[in-house]
Structure formats: C-alpha cells, structure tokens
Image 1: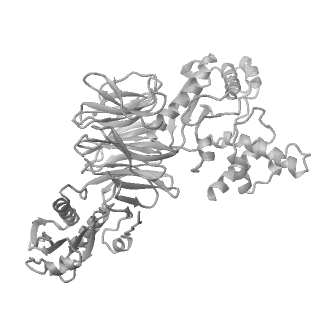
Image 2 (image 1 turned 30 degrees about the vertical axis):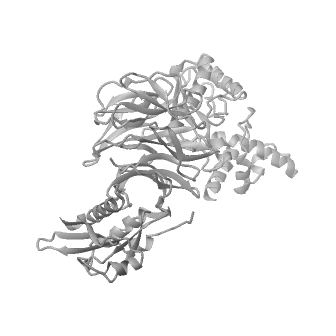
Image 3 (image 1 turned 90 degrees about the horizontal axis):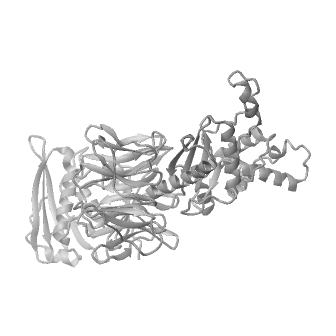
Length: 417
Length: 218
C-alpha cells in the first residue's frame, strides 16, 4: 500500500489557533473523490480560513483528494465550465463566500456541485459569531461528506485523551483535528479510562492521585468533580449506563476484580452484578442497555463476554486467539472493536456482532483502547510508534488510517457521543 | 542515556550504602542490570570495597554482578529510603523485653517477586523469601505491609490493573498462609502505570511484571 503522508504542520504553523497536534494520513481510500475548492474570499487577521479548514478536514478523512481551483470566483454560482473541471478529473466542486455582517457576525455560504451531472447537490448559508467559524467549516465538511458518500463523516466531534509529558498526566479534550484543546484534569499520578457521559456533559475517569485507582465524575462546564467510587482496593474501568444514571465499575474490594454498579452521583452502596473467581473488568454497555460487554479470564485467558442484564446470562463472544480485551461498541450496536493479540502483536480488531466475523484492522504492535467515532465508521485507538505513544484512527474496512501526534505520550482516547 | 546515568547514580549510592551487608538471599534475577551498570560506568570497586582483597578483574566483576543483582530490589522501592538499622537495644521507643527480639530479627532485603506473562503464580524461589518476611512480621507484630502489584505495558491498561491486583494478592495470600493476619497486609495494584524499567522489550517487561513488598514504616 502506498504510504501517503499529508502533513499539515506548515499550514498549521501559520494558523491563528496553533495546535500542537499533527495529523497525518498513513493510508487512504483506493479511489478518492476529487473535490475542487474555490476561494471563500479574503481572510481577516485572526480569523479562521474556512476554505482551508474545510480542505484539511476532507483531505484528512482519506476519502477525498482536494484541488484548489483558482479559476473559480468567490461565491460563484456555477452554471457552466464543468467540462473543463472534468478534464482535470474533478468529481465535485465547492464554492463559497465569507462575509462580515454589520453586527460583526459572519455569514458563510457554500454550494456543492456534482461536476459530472453539472448540478448543485447541496448549499447552505450560516450566520455565526467569528469564534464559531471553525465549527462552520466542520459542518460544511459534514455536508459535503454526506452528499458525496451517502454516509455521515466525523468532523465536528470532540475527543478526549491523556497526555503524559515530563512526568505529569493531563486529561484533555479537543476537536477531532486537535484544535481547541483544554485540560479536564491534571495530576502527577496516572489518569486512565476516560468515559464520556451519554449526553457529553460529564467525564468519568480513573485517577491515581491517592496512590490507588479511584473513579471520578467531572462536570465539563464547571469542572466540579466527585469521587463516585472510592472503595477499598482498586476502583476502575467506569462505563456509563445509556441513561447516564449509573456507572458500572471494576472493584477489587472482594479481592479479585469484579463488576459493580454505582450511582453516578456517588451516593449509595455499590451493587455487585456478577460473581466469579476470575478477573472481570472493562465493562461497556450496549447502546440499548440490554447487555454489558466485559473482559474476563474465567476461561483461562482474557476474552470478551456479554452479560444480559434482564436474565443474568453470560455468553462468551470472542474465541480467536488467547488474548481479546478492551471491548468497545459502535453506537448502532452493530460492531464490537477490541484489542486482539496475534503472534505477539496487540492489534485492533472488529467483529460484526450479527455474524461474529472478525477482521483485524491494524498492523501496529501495541494497540490499546479502541473507541468508535460518532459516525461508527472510524475507530480511534492508542498505539506506539518508535517508542512513543500516539493516537491513531482506522476506518472499519481497515483502509484509511490517520496518526495523531503531539509532544509527549498520548494514550486512552475516547470519541465524544 | 540520562535514565541510565540516573540509575547509575542510584546504583552507586545503593552499593556504597550496603557494601558492608551483602544480601544472602538469592536475589531476583535481573539480566538488565549488569548492562546498565556498565553503561553507567559504575566502578566495580564500589561493589567489592568491603571485601578488600579482590584484585583480579574477573572476580571484581563477579562481585559487582552479585551486588548489582540485589540493586533493583532497592531502587525499585520508589521511596528510595535507606534501610533503617534495627532499633538499638534499650532505645527509648522500644520496650526492653521486645528490643532483644527486634535486634535479632532480620528484615529481609528481597522485596520483589517477578511473574510470567499473564500469570500471578509465585516462583518456587519466592517461598523462602516470603517465609523470611513471615518470620520477621511475626517478630514485629505491629508492622504492616503494602504489596503493590504491577504488569508490563502490553495489552489493556485495565486488564493489567486487575492482573497487578492478582499478583499483589498472591503475595498477600502466601503470607496469610504463613499465619500473618490479612489485616496487616494491604494489596494494591498500579497496573502497567508505574514500570520499574522504561524499556519496550522482553528484558524490561520481565522486570515490570512484579509485586513489590513495602514495609509501611519505611
């Protein structure tokens, strides 16, 4: 597979909101749709360049090849000239315009044209305050993606991850392109297993600040944090219920790691869900709340199991290989992503739950912590490249891969709901 | 390199500190350490200073190796406090009757128990070490210990946390079987979050799959 790297480092260095994160594509779709993007007009100092953010988004998806088409006019309404664009293999054209309104708000309009059929596919006008321009660019990327591919993209979401740098740990949230990063919590001790609440307003995570793992829930708007599980021994692996009212956690208060339900408010006693003499950990709810998937070594090696809440029945899900851990479910409940050891390498695999077919998606050796993107078509995970912790994404067909790096070790990613 | 240099300094200090009391227990095997000692340019004389007579490089190296092998047991105790000398007889804090016992009891130096991949089974050689700790704890009925379990970096952080707990519990249960009350032993896990060695190869992983016994008064 040809290794295509599009490094946007230089472009970003000129950007007003400099982000330390670098994203590169390490594999793209075999047939990329060629999209010509016209100029959106002059960019005021300190203002986001909507056309460039859009071009970056679409390039980094691995699904599109972007050409800048200087012959197009700002805010063009295309009625002719498609033949010339087709000669340059252009499949689709985006034209747009950014206008500052008298009240200082900004209007962004765009139109997407099908160059083959010579007609408009979609067009919108947005009026936003200047600080929301990046968001508008992501929104336009979503519209273009949906119109051209018939499936949603994942441009506007947020990700959380942990950075370890200079012996300190920071739990961060940023846009999926690494911009607008902010810290949720920082500590000299490890932070692991961040989990977004279903409504995206709170984050559960495990902090070692008291020299043993304790589960906290933090409200993102005001930073208020509560220890929701601080029992004897280890408290870890928080998983939200779909209604956001409770969490399932792994506790070692009864020696071996076992699954319990705790209230999201931190009140009341934990309720034990399962009883085994083995390690049970890494719970995750199915989106309909019917099942809890989890990792257990009850069969002699760590494998993924599924526990049905209503009946209490437990069923083994993974059988290939002797190490299958870290279950993650797609939002539509169709796919299970997990870490699968194959010949000593730890790789991301997905299983289509209806058929139980497994496909290994990655070729790296130290993959961890898979999480589905909001569109269910991409998995983000942590891995190590040349001794350094990085984040990476892979499409469910395994073909499109991105790598997200910044200074320090990155780990424990989770995509926002 | 910096890491090796720092370890070298710790190592040098450690060896200097315990040169007069070479450990008799079989130390946990540690193939990584000798290379590190060399990389750090450790003078072998440090390791043999107390023996005084060793001149040949071969012997000196052997003695240094023996000393080095005990080193991780100490450097890995992150608190890195020097071992306290047993309380002197008649010291103000200690009751006279017990002080004799205290003076006789030897606080075992071996504190690290290594494990095979995805295993929490203690090695055959660990049992003698645990018996020594058991005897010491019986002689010091007020002493409490903390057992920290760890895993190597590979695979799932959460599964590793549970695995580290199981390793810590293995050590705890072995002591309980030696009639030490379980209320005196706290078992916790740090999973793969606190490696003893920051490498990404089998030599590092081997050293990181461990349980560490810490006396709470240290």
